[in-house]
Length: 198
Image (cartoon, rainbow, N blue to C red):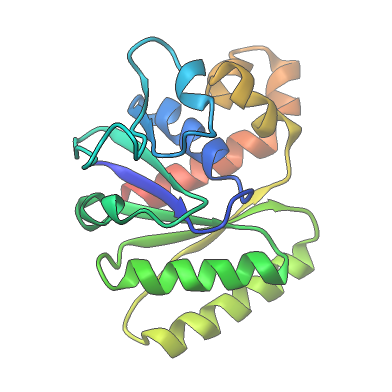
């Protein structure tokens, strides 16, 4: 069982989510983005770059989290087709939502096991309105598909996790103070894990 985190738009939190998911489920992290440094920061033999210059095809394997996007790459289609779930992250701006809908249309053609993650949410009302809008738009595209939409609250803890590539709950450990500070990030990642494993 492998997961793909994908969007045609950069800056929506793909890498942060990919790293958290890979560390949470103890999977290998693979990216096609040569501008990302996360593969170098992962523990040894747990992070890899499959750049377009070096790989004609991207090998599929179980127990991998693929971090794809910021650009179109036809090599990802076979991976997207075989993945257990496709996570499409978005932010709340109209530009991000438009890119999310374009990504969604592309992915639906080859795999309907999609989760939309509204990343870095601040205002609950705006996030709820966005969820309703996305549900309406998804129904217009395909009324037979059920795509969960979940929220990941804004958290400097998640952003900072890219520097050491450590899962936030592991990072908090048994320290009650850290667990209190990290609680939103931990809760959101646990919720994401439940949806991924369905």
